[in-house]
Length: 208
Image 1 (cartoon, one colour):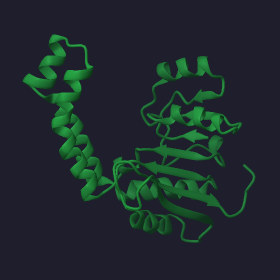
Image 2: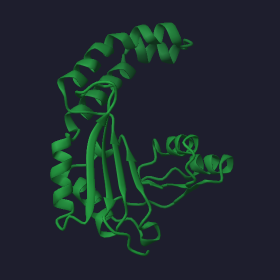
Image 3: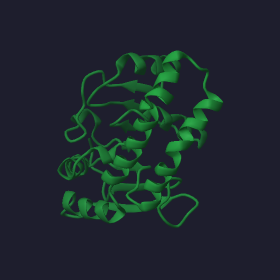
Image 4: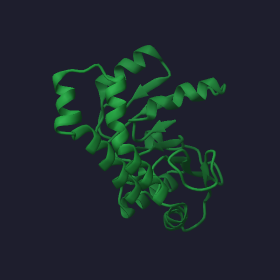
């Protein structure tokens, strides 16, 4: 498994191991964090990492045919970049899994609107207070505003399932992959508690 945006990549391996899968995870990013990843690798030899920038739109041949994952990061890319990421997976015959928490829906935005005042209560109850935290939470509420801004802008930039279907068709004009799209969670409609996914698998295996 090649995690091409590794903020959430370390969460992949423990979950796969709990399900009995025998895999290794390669952490990579356009902005690598080798010191942090080195600590993970020291604790679990199934982790390795690329200590130089790796562009998800142009993954080196060393990692072709490996499963690529991108977790809660795809909405950071514009449409052309998103198609480029999908196209590179198709060209290199590499399966790809994209999971997004952010969803472009009124319910998602309302969740963050409602959550904004709750941040102050959560901070009051759970945090150990320091002058800096008091300043950033209450006097100049920078942290709650960042939480609110990140959630709302992520929702506005998120791709719907229809968007993903369209981009996969553009990235794979020869239909050489099997694509599946859906939402996993407790509700049959987009909510902040569902995860949206896109999975592309080559129809035939090509030797690396």
